[in-house]
Image (cartoon, rainbow, N blue to C red; front, side):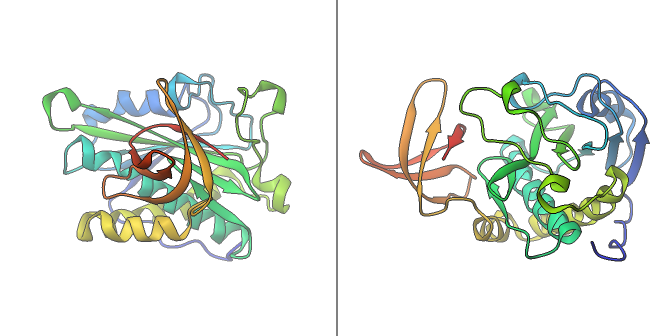
Length: 254
């Protein structure tokens, strides 16, 4: 781990809570009164959740935090913050564990370590029904010390791993946030200054299974094809037997 974390971004607040139901719920409660961005880190969650309302198990020593933002654009622009968050997570983990550690980003919102899921991202917004967003909550969970047991996973789910279990590196949630916060601010500034194009390029350079066959499952259908790229909207682009397809939302399986 780097001897000294980067400088914390100016104007970004940080609150550490001993326990909370979920950092996403706490973010929603705090959002109306916030003057600027704020990280909410919980050392223990009693009701953590992931995508589509799935339970997110959060043993002591793991990382659970939400960043509350007021994005400038509409819902489509806000959705691309998941790629900003993935890049920040990837680089923060590399800074903590070392650049040689095999990390990759799995579309749409997971970070892999040695081929197993070490981190996940969840975005929620308020005010989307009005056409403009009042706040965006970027929830991040990282298996720093513990990984869920295989028997609690959904069928077909990717095997989870922990940073400590795979690398032997031990880091506290507070110390990890000291790396993640500056990394997020760096990619956020790039996105807000130059748009999605450089974020897309950086994401593709870290993408898992690019150029390989993957399976994308939605509630309506299953698509199998070669993972060619992501487009300017962040959609997964597959080359399938039926032609080239852009998929906006799906679960991806290797």
